[in-house]
Length: 137
Image 1 (cartoon, helix red, strand yellow):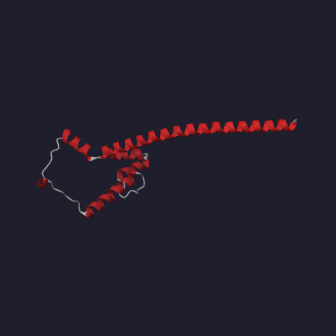
Image 2 (cartoon, rainbow, N blue to C red):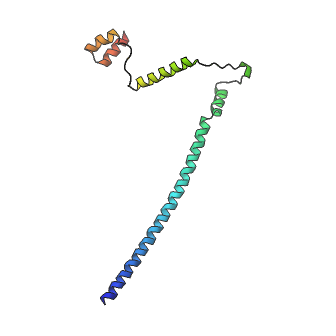
Image 3 (cartoon, rainbow, N blue to C red):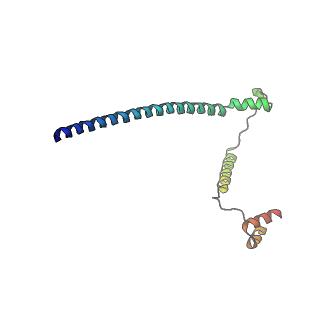
């Protein structure tokens, strides 16, 4: 009798385990279909944003704005002049711009001496007050 009861309990447990696995598999299938639909929507939104960025970066938009609002006129090719910056000047300009950006980020040492007024006032006032006082003079 105990053996029969054991086998019945064993079969019931197997049946419940099978039902649980089927329900879990079904839930995962439903979740996968939701994620697939969401992925497709996000892909479509991404493509729409890529197209919008390409449209906004295009010169047609700026050219249309310049023609309508600023009165840009098309010039014949013989009236267009192209000026090129000398290489040395371009390199100096790039170097200066990078030094300015580095200085604004707080990573540059001061290369020019402080004005005398700021140094004298800096001994008495805070640095911010000394700078504001030297600017006023």
